Length: 78
Image (cartoon, rainbow, N blue to C red; front, side, top):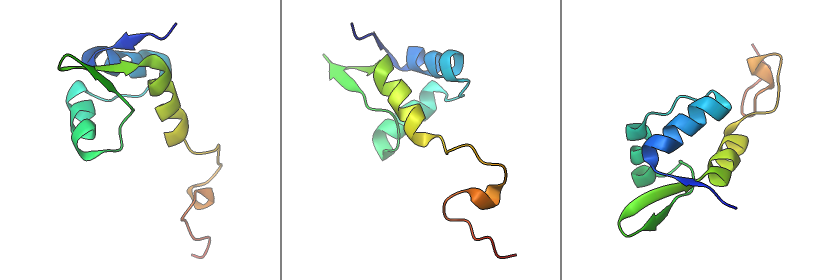
């Protein structure tokens, strides 16, 4: 069964489950500008599925690296 939470709950879920700090206001901004987790609306209220929050985190995390030079888009030339 899918679990849904409002914006404040989504912020708390990200912090407690993933250790990621995103204020409710930041999630609201992301809804307007893009780049945030998927959400749904019901009767004017915004809800986030916990599965969507988990998926968003997975997509934003890089692979494990030992140096910033290993990150995509970084040049190894000094």
